[in-house]
Amino acid sequence: MTGPRITVAGAGSIGCYVGGVLAAAGQDVRFLARDRVASACAAAGLRLTDYDGNDLHVTAPVMETEARLALKDADVVLVCVKSGDTAGMAREIAAHAPSAQVISLQNGVENADMLRTHLPGADVRAAMVPFNVASQGAARYHKATSGDILVEAGPMPDLGTPTLTWRQVDNIRAVQWGKLLINLGNAINALSDLPLLTQLHDRAWRRLMADQMAEGLRILAAAGIIPARTTAVPPWLVPHVLRLPTPVFRRIAAQMLTVDAQARSSMWDDLKHGRRTEIDALQGAIIALAARHGRHAPLNTRMRALIRAAEDAGNGPPGLTPREIRGARGT
Image (cartoon, rainbow, N blue to C red; front, top):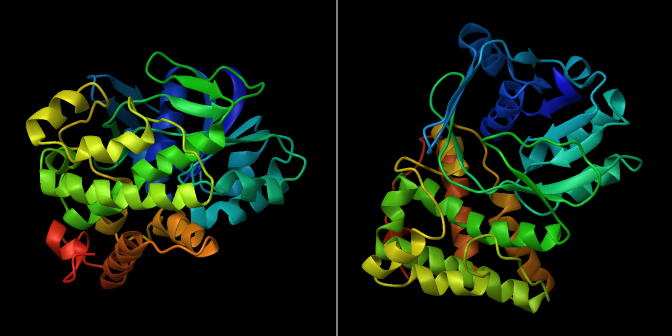
C-alpha cells in the first residue's frame, strides 16, 4: 500500500467505483459499507469496468460495517453518502477521524457546508463527480459516462490513477451549480425507465430536459448565481443544443460527452431498488432558491412531486412519457 489511509464513507456506486479504482492502484483504502455490500465484496471481490473497456478487480477490498473501524486512523475521508445522510456521517467523522481531510463527492451544493458545520476544525473540500456509475449486480460497478473529478483547490494527496483523474479548481461552488443543472435530468431519466442514450436520441425527451434546465437557469440568474461550465458548452447554451433536430444534436453531443448505451441515472437506480432519492438536493435546491427570490419553478416542482410519488408507490421507475411528465396542462 502507498500514500495516505483513505476511508470511503458510503460504499454505494460512486464510493465503490472511486475507492475501488484507488485500491486497484495500490492505495490504502477502506470502505464503510452496509452488510449487503460488504458480503457481496467478500464473496466476489470488487469488479470495476468502464465505457473504454477497462476492467479492474479488487480481490479483497477492506469493507467495514462499523464507522469506528472504517474511520480509524484515516488521513482522507471521501464522503459518498446521500445528501440526507451528510449530518450523521459528519458526526461519525468528528468522533472517529477528527483530523482527517474530508472530501465530499456528493450531489448538490450544500453538503460541504454541512460537513464544515459539524467539523469546524477539519479541512473539508467540496468536489464534483461528473460521471455516472451504475451497479451491475453484486459487487460490480460500471462507469458509463466520461469526465474528471473536480475538487476545491488546496493541498491534498495525489489520488490520480491511470483511469481516474482529479483536477483542482478555484470556482468549485460555480462548478457544483453547473453540475446540478445537468443533474436535473436525473429525475427525467428515473421517471422514463429508459437508458439515457435512448432519451438523448429522442427530441421530445431532450426538449423536456431543456425546459427544466432553462427554468433552473432563470432561477439562478434571479439569485445572481453564475454556474460554471461542466460540459463542452456553457450552461446557458445547453438547452439550445438539446432542442436541436436529432441529427444535428448527435454531431454536437459526440464532442460533449461519452455516454455508454446502457447508462442510467443514480435516481433511476434508487427507484429500482426502493431507496429514497436525492430529489431534494437537486430539484429541491432550485425550488428553495426560487422561493427565496420570489420566483416560481413549476416544472422542477412537478418533477419532485412525481419522484416523491414513485418513491411512495415503491414499484420502481414508473415509465412515464414526456407528455405525462409535463402534466395535463403542459407544465
